[in-house]
Amino acid sequence: AIKRLDVHEKVFDPLVDALVTHAKNARVGDGLTKGITHGPLNNKMQYDIVTGLLEDAKEQGAKVLCGGSAPEGPGYFFPPTLVTGVKEGVRLVDEEQFGPVLPVIPFTDVDDAVARANASPFGLGGSVWTTD
Image (cartoon, rainbow, N blue to C red):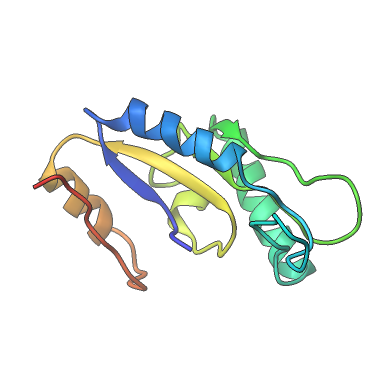
């Protein structure tokens, strides 16, 4: 899973809207059940990490656009969750979470995006998507 999504400010709002629509169509539950698209987190420790990072982000002003709370019932299920209003310095952005919570962060130009990418000590992967 990707850790964060940096999006150029010119396409930020329409892209976020499309992602929210997609995330809201996800079905969380037993992965062996037909129609389910997202199974549980690996274990309680990972569940606690993901929910803790999200709570920290909310305390720092994050806006949760969809998801954001576990469904009722047993298991470590958590829906795809999109978050805006965060930046470097917020644990959700700075730390590896390995969960279905995605911070979406606007950038202004290539230099801004590269500086943000290089500010992390993690280097697990990255990609650039563009029309040209």
